[in-house]
Amino acid sequence: MSSKHTAIEAHGLYKRFKTGRAHIEVLKRVDFDAQHGEVTMVMGPSGSGKSTLVAALSGLLKPDEGQVTALGRDIWSLGSGKLDRFRLDTCGFIFQGFNLFAALSALKQVEIILKYQGCSPSEARTRAERALCEVGLENRMHQRPSELSGGEKQRVAIARALAKDPQLLFADEPTSALDGENGQIVIRLIQRAAKAHGAAVICVTHDPRLEAFADRVIHLEDGQILDDRRASPAAPQHAVVAPQQPELVGA
Image 1: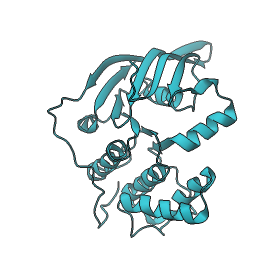
Image 2: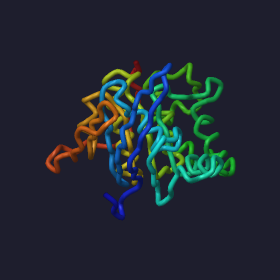
Image 3: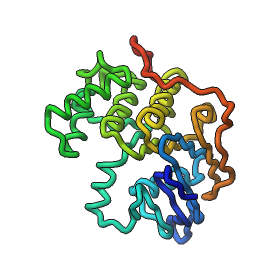
Image 4: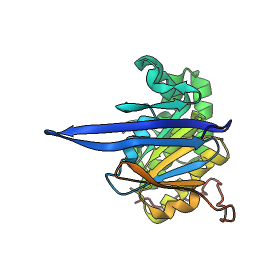
């Protein structure tokens, strides 16, 4: 499973949750890996364990058993402070709820995470502006979330992730709150993170329309991998250019 291009791999991930007197097995000793420069799509019905898998891979939820090696480090052997720093420095996150601060402009949303990384104010602004331009929001930088459409909000979240130049990018149902047209814009930008930035992109979704944008599709059900296949080399390639203005209306 390992190769010089492997960004992250996991062995024997097991997780269960207690509900009353019973325990529900959510991950049943799952093995997983993802490569730099590729989009790995993790698909499955609600309750299949896909979000729990991503949480375990990204250092957000410790598995009961198993090991995760990300960028050569056993992440669950790190102390909490080092694990937080690992996520800050190397990981980007995109969620269906956008996770934006209501009081901050799009520019400030991106700047703040770069300042946490240790960037100077001028460098943070330059990188934030560049990232927002990359996702087609050069004319919306000073708008707050209440003034943005759903599609624009998700693009701010993508810009925030891309500005860090992450080696690992985790996206959990990134298009579920968007209409079809904006969903395509968002998934193309996520694909761009892999192709133009070289990140290993791990995207959780139940939307079959997104399969066409993946290099690899893993189907998870009842806490186990049922199918793991790579995209056909003959499959059409999708452009990964930034969207053009004017902005499409979000869902």
